[in-house]
Image (cartoon, rainbow, N blue to C red; front, top):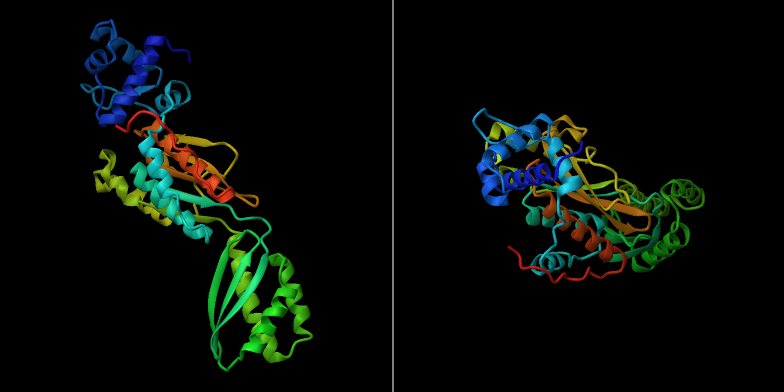
Length: 352
């Protein structure tokens, strides 16, 4: 649809006023704030025309207008100005991004929590596992004569460990012999390749020795299985209650329940090369999200792994600010995973 410049200006003003106040926007507000050289009556006529086009809605007969999902979509696609992060914002995000990179799961979980704090919306973080993960090295550390710690390092630099307690005793030379066997036999093998190799070892090892080998290798297989699946975390779900749309628990509870129980993030788009994606209202596949918007940004983990980070909130969302923060945060994650450095701090206008 083709709008006149005045209609575009009025639509943008309605969207941005409603984002700010959560109250229907009247013609008088538009006339006073936009400095239009026209009467309130003219603005009302233009708003009525935008309503006819399906871009605005009137919740009550005497009320002003609010944007429709189609109105938000046109705003996002054509009218929204890019939000430039302030130096304070970029500095705060960089400080938050100084995470320990030892375990992907921990980083993904912390990332979701940080994004929720910055945006004031429920947030999620997801990573798709590498299609071919292998064990790079085994380390066995003696704790006492009946217990040792297994440490496995994968080819994607993920570290996992487990305490193993034995019914009998084991001395240091026996532990080192087991360590050598594991590092010469079970490294650089995929999950599918480990089982046949374990069966081959079983035909040569004594029963007690095979029991120890099997115990450690089983743990390694659990690690590989975990890393080849999707890692998904949510945070800040109760932040919905801070927004006017969800002050009523009757309205908030179904969405809170859905976000709490949807543990694998199947409602989210798959990570892609596309930097950001905005899904508005009815564009969401899940019925529970038809009155919400989902904004996501993709990041590169390396080793053929990608992830997304994003938020869920009311359609009355500050899309420009949320998109800018998510994009910068995703870029920070990509840089940390890939190069171990943070994106540069932007020197722009002061944070409002």
